[in-house]
Length: 247
Image (tube, rainbow, N blue to C red):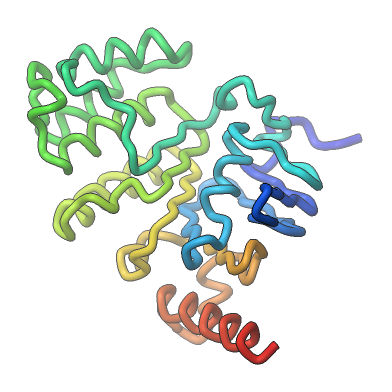
């Protein structure tokens, strides 16, 4: 008998592959993302990061293997109720006020916690009456995060959501995100090309290269020698690229 879903890990992939017409985007991927981690999902362009996130959300279906989210297989009919997803192209209506945006969140999420969402907006200092189109990039990101977190997820997927922010805004948003993840017990999977910004933020690493898992595990174990996260990831990516050139 398998584990009941409430004790299942946020993500379990067993031999997962995804093939498009142009070829395999992900191959023979097996991993477990444990609960209460902030996961760095890293790798070069085309490594399969967005594909893996698409499989977790159910927006994509695996060609081979199986993937479960809290013990359930994604149906492709919408996100798992315990999952929130935020991509770089933030799903905000420019003509809505911040308050109207939160109302929209309440109408589309049965588990919506308006008080918590409003708390996050207030914490960010974003005016509730302001239209989304008038906000700075950092403010829009904070509103998007309030939408994602207001659902009260147990797993939050972030696919390059900070790429359009300046370094100071990225640092501020990451600090706020880390605080919420720790205090609310949320597992976060954060995809980013800026390895330096993940230092001291992520405690678990999933490194993809060429559609395969190159390295996965808790950072404390992988960096037992004190190697910084970014340096560790780059070392393995360079070694993989060198092996490909030599082949």
